[in-house]
Amino acid sequence: MDPNESAAYETERQAVEQIKDARQRIGAELAKVIVGQTDVVEQLLIAVLSGGHCLITGAPGLAKTLLVKSLAQVFDLRFQRIQFTPDLMPADITGTEILQETEHGRRMVFVKGPVFANMILADEINRTPPKTQAALLEAMQEQHVTAAGVSHVLERPFFVLATQNPIEMEGTYPLPEAQLDRFMFNVSIDYLSEDDEVAVVLQTTARDAGGIKALFTGPDLLRFHRVIRSVPIADEVARYAVRLAGASRPKRAGAAKFVDDWVSWGAGLRAAQFMVLGGKARALLHGRFHVAPDDIRAMALPVLRHRILLSYRAEADGITVENIIGRLLDAIPGI
Image 1 (spheres, rainbow, N blue to C red):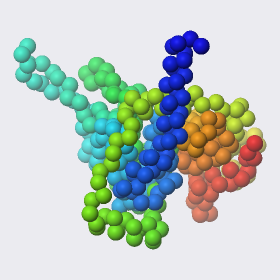
Image 2: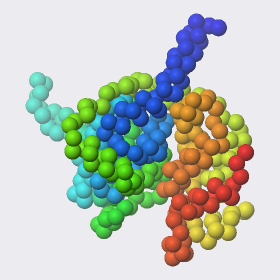
Image 3: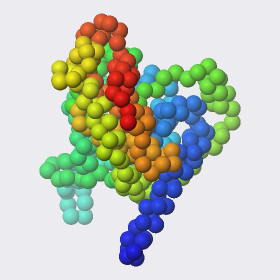
Image 4: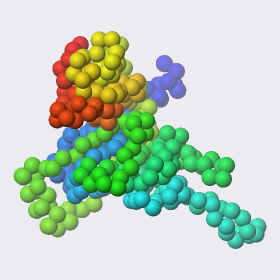
């Protein structure tokens, strides 16, 4: 084997071992401040390891901000929280040019906004008008910001984790479906069990347990992104992801009757791509170097949750998106 190839193989092997070990180590570190929410933590970890953005839906007071900030600390990433409000302007996110005195005289200087960080928490993204939403979403997609015709590249790794409050919908600007599609996952955070709530109360009213330790770095994370994409997947497993996404689309040949009745718009190709990418990350986290159908099934809910638009009939019948996804998983056979 060529020495360069041998060194690359050894680097990749070490990264695989680190990812396998990361699930337990990160879980133990986050347990210092986060109680329960095991599935939520795993889904966010998969998104970060895959290089994807997340939409987080949950009522106030469920530690969404603390969870995201703690995750940034684990990976030693620069964290910024942006509170989205109706009067927030695009320049408040991306930055703006101001006139400054320099040694060469007065000149326009670009002052970077809070989007120039590694991990952004876009708090209540549906509270701000579409023009401001679009400024952030463009940065997510293009990985750069343009001001006065000059492009400013965002530092990598770059993640946006945006929260939505599902209770207070008055005065909000819901994200259009095309913009929702840019998020890899829609992670739903629910209330804890009574025992877990007791644990939170006891933990938060006692002495400080100590801060979160950085276990990895940004360069480590970029290496993990490359390794995860190299995980092999059988054609049949990839086809299963494509079939799940395709089965959510109404008014097409072979569509199930419940889809025609209850779905106005289904998931696009990006859903299958994210199920496969998330499946690769999940496989490594669980100690496997291949993607199984169960990995795809585990990714179906967070990937499809925000990509299926219910019809008025579904809402009248009390059908939820989760109901639709559950029936899709039952209807589409695995391998």
